[in-house]
Image 1: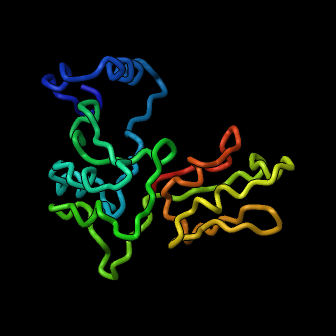
Image 2 (image 1 turned 30 degrees about the horizontal axis):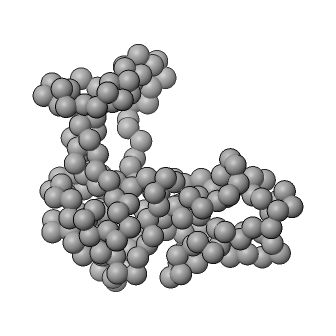
Length: 188
């Protein structure tokens, strides 16, 4: 069965999940491996280790003050119930308190030994799509970048992205007013 869905879980799928499964099975160009998910801050970097340690308790999503952490459904197979983020639709706010990490009882989300939190992804900018390149003044991305991070600054009316400082929270992509968006996010 595709994506590791058990027969029992097949009956728990939502209607839209069946269409996704059908496309997966019938598409000759379907990816062999599922794309890596955006996990909450502090998630173990090894996906297999994360799946084995996470007890799927939902404490991280309950603790999140912005309610941006979701949990995968039955279509995710063995990853069902694990926390994920969709930063382009509901970005992480990279809170100073990191309540999601503090609430995790299993250690699937944890601080690094130096009490820092590694990035969840990285943003990239396509300047040709930026409103500033079209003569429209905009600094929304720089204003929305979390205060403790400030990976985006403005120089000569252009956004400058410091990739080393970027944590992949998605606030820049979410708030970007360009269409299509000038920011793209990728997991690590």
